Length: 432
Ligand SMILES: Cc1cc2nc3c(=O)[nH]c(=O)nc-3n(C[C@H](O)[C@H](O)[C@H](O)COP(=O)(O)O)c2cc1C
Image (cartoon, rainbow, N blue to C red):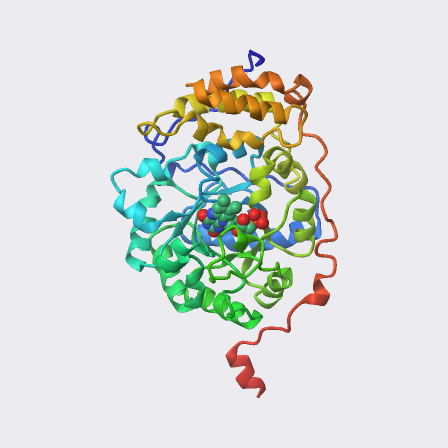
């Protein structure tokens, strides 16, 4: 066994046995920064709006650092296991759950731990819900309160036929902004944490900048929603797959930056196609309040998340090596195995780790070892004992190295690409 006797200090007590009540939610104190960049000043201002909303609801105690960086909600990927790994690598990244259908929460109300429980270390964490029935969205939010999520987000961006077609929610909701405003008001009325919307920049031929602005304007003026996460490509509901819907429609970051200019009182997080910490900082230098990364944070967790605390938050890194991360994760994994009947399996728990050695020496051999070990290992500890010899000590014992280079000029010309200013109907009438 290659693991040293590193002492394990993180406790992963499940909520079912260590239930968090609303009053016992843990919130960390803000860290003060000496680095005074344009983006930090800008984001501090926006974050104070958020703080006010916590004050308004009387729940502000300690506070997390702002959502300058977040890991996107990803079905089957950002489950409890992935989030546990992510939090071991970055203390400050905001983590989103996978989308949970409101109907599921309501129908499983006697079995909620399975869907909603997470360990306290995962704060700050946002619950994403999906649905198109106001009563269910309201009830689901109410049921989720006991789990102390830090924000509730409504999915208005999923193009999957099951969700947007048959379910008439996800990105289909963008076609009816008044309904979204009503839904967000119902969600907000049933929680005391901030609420937000994650959406695309358009749907099919409803893809003009003005239509996007109409959506944001309606939802923000008719509901308490002040934070929008913008996946900066439209969705096509013409039968292409969800994966194709994340690559075929072109990214239009200029729409995102247009929103920042035209809605100065709102908070916007940019999402879509951002794959490095350099690009996160470039997006923030161009004015984005927050940046959300999806696939890159799953495919390369060590090199993306490993730099978030230092390069984005200016805070100390977690200081762990990959060996130490694995040691902690093994304790977690073995305590979770089979918690709900035959799930989670060894494979479920190991899944997020399969990318931990992305592009490192020994990664290919380790994955081949893993294929064999899945067939006979019954614990996470034995799985690693059987496979980890493929990874050199130099990889296991090194702290995170220099971040991979990104496109620092990704947003360099954004000002010249901005769409014409959005004018509300009232302004048009006054000017006519
Ligand atoms: C496997 C997978 C599942 C996803 N599931 C969700 C989801 O549940 N809710 C959601 O709003 N977006 C979902 N998305 C979209 C991501 O949140 C994100 O918007 C998209 O991947 C673009 O960001 P990226 O280019 O950084 O990956 C999913 C993406 C992937 C790859």
